[in-house]
Length: 169
Image 1: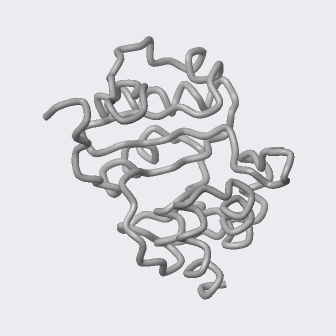
Image 2 (image 1 turned 30 degrees about the vertical axis):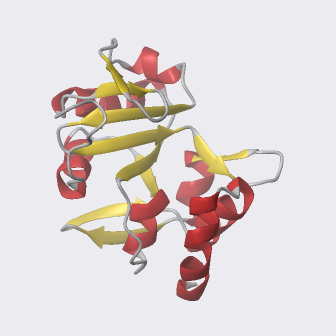
Image 3 (image 1 turned 180 degrees about the vertical axis):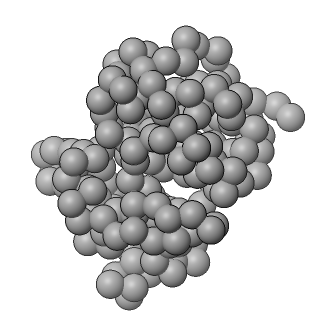
């Protein structure tokens, strides 16, 4: 497989790794929408973890177990081996990873105001629902938070997802 070809998304394997390591996170993005019944296909798993040193170490341990390598580049992707520990993660706001179970994006937060003020884990967990997906209970960002973040990000893929998310709300 080339760097440009992501493995098929195995969200159950990805979620299980983070849960097994005790990582605290809120599921956001396309898989979060699917947890509410959205049918749009997504190619990665987006997580907003608690951004504490201890939790980032747990997240890093899960990523190591998944054989994660950092993704860089647009179009043509390059995969980098980096020191995968909590200190490395703490210095990044959006961290895209390629694992043997698919791609994972770790996010400091999702947009909540037009000034790109971020709704971080602490805000998202307050409004999150605990939903069973793939046989595991996970915290999923509220539909209102998902919709607001897509409205603010306003990328073509976000605009495409909005009508379905609004219908689910």
